Image 1 (tube, rainbow, N blue to C red):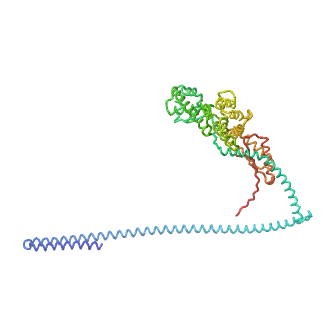
Image 2 (cartoon, helix red, strand yellow; image 1 turned 90 degrees about the vertical axis):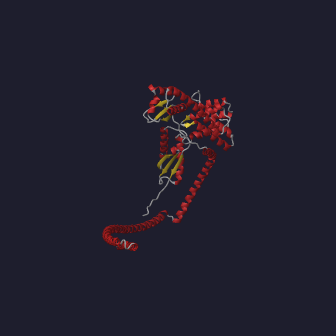
Image 3 (tube, rainbow, N blue to C red; image 1 turned 180 degrees about the vertical axis):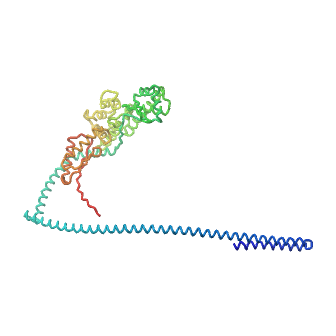
Length: 522
């Protein structure tokens, strides 16, 4: 503040000096003429400078008082903030002290508990040592008593046991020789299984279970009324033209198409989807869409037939046979798609023919056409075997292909190795897991029968049928069944399953014997 005051005073003094200098100059210019005016101006300048100086002093004093007040307020605020911070730190230190005291008390308790546990463990260790000494003493006395009763020393007893073990080993050796002879007889079967397994590994196919219904989604529930039409005209027209039942129930935004003919069901599905997209649903439009859907399904049938011949590498088939192959896409047998089944049989037969050095192309051709009769067996009299053989003869297929079709279900004797391979490939494709459906009731009965057979043997503790009934896992009691006996036990269970149960493929019997010793480190 003093600096500001001095500055103002300096400014004022400068102004006064300037005024005086101006007056002197004016005086020099016109001393005589303006002497009186100059004197008046000098007097008024002095008064004005004095007034400015006084006002500056008052302002400086006011600023000084304001600065002092602000400084005092700032010091007061700083003191309050410092006191508050000190109180907070003191409270935090007190809380930490309390927590440390609590932790110290807890640690003291834990140390005391550990000391007690240590004392208890030492006591138990001494008891165990005493028990062990007693046990060793009893063992020594038992050995002495056994030597006295048997009249044999330890060495004599060892020699006796070794003699018995030698006799048992000779017996087991004889059994092993018999087993080796049996294995030699099974070598041919094993080789055949290897060929079949190789074929299955090279021809892995996904299987999809077919159903007798199709579900068509709707954009909204109002579409159901439009599909039904006035007095049911639209739905009657659609059912009459396609031969498929439309089920319109409380299912939200969906219509169910029910029918056993998959081709008709596909035509109805495509027709309904096109009508929903078009929005114009009336009898005349329905007739038009049904015709378009039939043409589309016919085109799909031709494409599926061409795809089957391309995937299998079978060429030169009659166009009608290719069309019949395409129809198999919409034919199922025990839930298995017949076209996929035929392609798989063709590939399996070709792979096995290559392994045996037979005609691969002929085997694939016969495998692809072996179920061709199923495409029209619902339209013609007779079994699909007879119908398929007649179709093959009609379209100039070779005698080997015809015989393979006739013999793949054992109706006639196979006359070539190709027919035998087709029969084997058909059995593999139909029996592999997931290929065909069986009723839930028969499946459950088979599983229950498996577990019942396994549990009927003595020494069985637990039994589980797993892998959809393709494996039985048996846990035996280790005290009742030895390691050598589990081999015989597994063989006995297999024989009983083979004699009492009918099943596709093979069932693995897994007998488990284990002994566990459990201790806890503390």
